[in-house]
Image 1 (cartoon, helix red, strand yellow):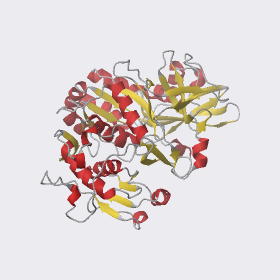
Image 2: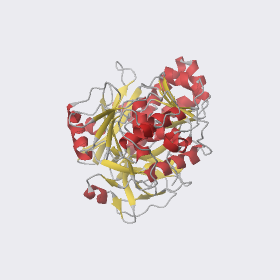
Image 3: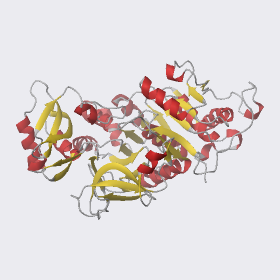
Image 4: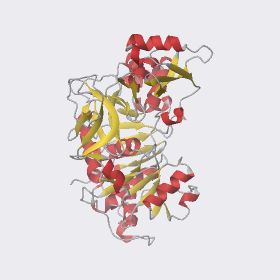
Length: 499
């Protein structure tokens, strides 16, 4: 198997590649410097067992994860915003032998008993210094990337919406195949410069947004904290790609009328990609109208990495996440587990996938691992979708929270949310179902009004939806909020709405 990072795969971590690899604010490392600092740290991590990484948006996080991968040590990225109980569960479950941090980081009590190692991102001043000499007595030897594709690379914990978070064990094979499939779909090369402001404890920001550019031999500029000004600055100064979540693209769409430099920068980008949740059609259209560029969407999850994407040479369709990536098998199944033929855009089914992009297991949870798979090695995603006749996939929501059974119909919350967002009086919208003695479930719309002083009436919104979709898809109840509850990736937390 090829190493995950070909540009770093030189003896003792040395490479002649001088181009910039990582930039966080005004701090940066070239590929050669990254090879030096990550290679030196990899020597110290050799044989360490699992290592936790306190995943702040920083050079130290990126270097720590790369070093662990070079050393063949599974890395467990930790969300610095995790609550005490959740963090204690993850630490106990993953049992890391070390936690990697930036210098001077204050850690919470859940990590008090875990030995700590501060990550030094200062390149060796002497390029001829061999890490084998280990002048500080902190470990000896050299490093070489493992060649076992099934070896655990990362253990990424799920959001825990239906219980304590589960650690998805991601092998090197899954990371390599996903990133190479995306390179094929997006024409991603070493010439690309990616900009994003995503957290580094999720698949999106860490694997796609950080390891992806490094595998290609390109570079990433991390914004630290997302801002439209930062996007305009980086895309206007050489960056070619932007990764974001719907919340970020919504802020971009809102800012475009008053920020001509942002519109110019987006228009000059090679690729705009949205993921982690569905991007509302309304925001798609506003961005396209202002910039002439369409955002493309892709679909994946922690356990599967990436499954589908709109291809750079394909047709961007608002509301669609494209076609299966190379090597990924995808099917829709009905409630009886029977496969739904491609071609009926009204037939809603659960997405099941299989391929080299999948995780190997939930850490310490053989019961959950077994339950996650259907016969034939198909992973049950829990996501509901329809497929266009040409194979494009359209997500309609989660099976547990977004499939509403009302009056004998199966209705996806996503299409109703998109219709509501087309109303000028709606800033944000979410749709759920709640028990109804007549319909089985009634459709409930949760609305953040554009003008809180004069919100659109329930009757107005119901008529608006019925005109665009069908009468049985109109909301029967409308509830008004100041803001929708969202997680770190911008996903609406519908269980919080219901509670």
